[in-house]
Image (cartoon, rainbow, N blue to C red; front, top):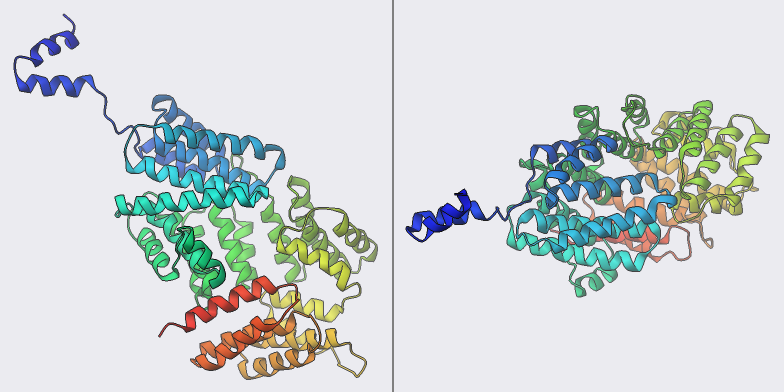
Length: 501
């Protein structure tokens, strides 16, 4: 007699046998589990060893096709591939696979935290994929649905730290947008708070959970984004992550990004040179574009040219082409190769799109600055790299005369202000910022609003909120300059922090 038939008959003889029959006859409802195989697949994926991650997660899905945790990791592999490479030839296929996984997750009967969390994460990744494709309306709808799912998860599973990781990041980002936009977000159910978001992120970053390092990475990136005073801490955090996980290419990228933004160019270049380069990693062309900037800052024009050519040979997308040609123009021009410089100057107009800020800047450059001042350009690049002494020495070779144009005069004072600010010569920096503002009168140059913003930061650091508020408000008052949205966003975010006691 089969065991199943035997148990069925015995079930009616005693309640114990009834329980045993039910236990053996019906599989567990919780098919989704963060198993060792899923963990290994995730660790390979987050390190950008995508082929290895795909192999591991497919093995898990063959045995357990309804494991929401495995479906999430599989989706993350597609999302990272698209976000990093931005190859339009494969974008439609990647988005279709993500949509299919979301439908699969939605059809699962299992009622568990992993299913709920995977639904939110995959929906968010779909939203970001659509945004990268330029589908802003579709991205906004999916982002709202993802946010509502995260919020529901927080109520149902308040102690599930992975959910607090991403919910916290969204709360910080929503809380940092200007008031006028945040009102609209609140109306459609997306409420943000920098303080609440950081609390959630810190919980996920400091307590044991499967995605703790990912939370630490997000925390550092968002600290860098919303709090200028936390730049050193953010740089230290991402550098520590990259050194603790030398096989993680994503952490190498994040460290390069933050160190570059905080003008720690030599450290950023070190990270680039020791990044994992062996076979099996996802190709990451943008790293070479970043390295080209870092070499340009320190005056290593030949390596800058080589790195940007390497980027252009590997990159399949439309973004960053104008920026790469602009930097190639600068490297050739500053290196005394005028013929090659002119070639890349012409290519700025011919190649790529202007969706990214650095591409838009390159496009404006060919229209607004056909004959740049060599010394000002050198000083600017050296400042961007954190080479302040060298930049100040170059600035000393510039002499202002009555014939100096208003634009060049304004930039001269602005560059001196930024350099002195970086060197902590704060009284001189303040004087130079005010001189840049005065020289920019009756123009649409961005030096004045940027100078006002920086003066706000200086007085806020000095615990002079009234003066800081005046300068932030002045920064907001400038109209028609090319960085209006960026400067206004930073000034409004700074004003929010002044409201706190």
